[in-house]
Amino acid sequence: MGEKSWVVDINEKLEHMNPSEESKLWEKRSIYIVPSCVKELNDKSYKPQVVSFGPYHHGEDHLMPMEEHKQRALLQFLKRCNKRLENFVKAMEEVAGALMEAYERLDERWTDRDRFLQLMILDGCFMLEILRTFHDPSKNVYAPNDPIFSTHGMLHMVPFIKRDMLMLENQLPLLVIDRLITVESGKSEKDNKNDIVRSAMELNEAGVQFKASKTTSLKDISFRCGVLRLPSIVVDDTTESMLLNLMAFERRHVGVGNHITSYVFFMDNIIDSSKDVALLTSKEIIQNMLGSDKAVAELFNQISKDITLDEKDPLDVVQRKVNKYCKKKWNMWRANLIHTYFRNPWAILSLVAAIFLLALTVTQSIYTVLQYYHDDNNSPSSPLTPPPIFPPSPAPPPF
Image (cartoon, rainbow, N blue to C red):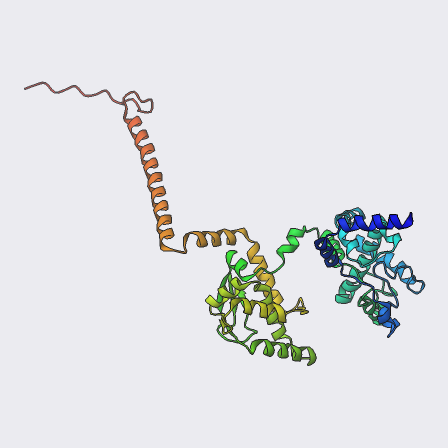
């Protein structure tokens, strides 16, 4: 009986087997459990020491003392942003399925959605408070003798917390942080997307003009009055190797700066496809010696992986200026007008003719109205004609 049941069960699974659905399921997973055979090499390197993030290590005895501080961080987070907890719960409920699917395996106790979302919010708020306080200590609102968020805590505890944040099994889906920040800031997801730098084609459609800088220095990038100036660069077979080695040097040599890394990051943002490369080539910003616009796009997209940019970097300031410019509707309307009517002479002539005809129509209408009032005023029966002050003089006698 048991064997028949097993056969039926396997046959049912075989009928519903869908390779494409399985592929989608694997793609959703991003937080994994380290295999035992790997942990055997150095078990301690894969286990958090002071704090748990996510469900895999939650509740372990040596990590429980930090739970008290998570609660304090949650309260401080809610107080600072002046938002109700219900708002964050609602935002997480909308993506609960995606959050749970991000984990390779969940214990039965975490299949309870409410319990799982409570963990996501609590751990997410604690992580944000750690990062916020560490990034800008001047805005620290915690007590001076706080065991975690004080200067003393930043020196002696936060380094261990940051180490635990890097553990493969000790992760939160990025979507958790994204949702918390979205609700905290009061911005919609659409607003957040607007902060992303657009591609060159999208910038052009929004009214941004591209011009080559006066120098070839990769630092010579500026944005002013709707004009984005970029240095000219020759892209050939040696470009990829050269940029990669220069970026590696910037990473290793303290104090040399990160001008090359910033440039590559910026170019990756504005180059998404061969059309973007073609636009920059037409503006003499890129001299394509590879022959293929697609190859140039793939080059910048490939070498920019794992690059992050400091928010105080000059090019990040340029990006924010470009975003601000693109958000103004007038700039988009003006760009649309130019793209629609001023790209060829026939369109220009049509627009001029239309304006001329409109002016003639308005002039004719005004003239007709004025003529009407003039004739009406000169009419004898017009009530607007004033009566004569003196009687008319008699006609002279005939001779």
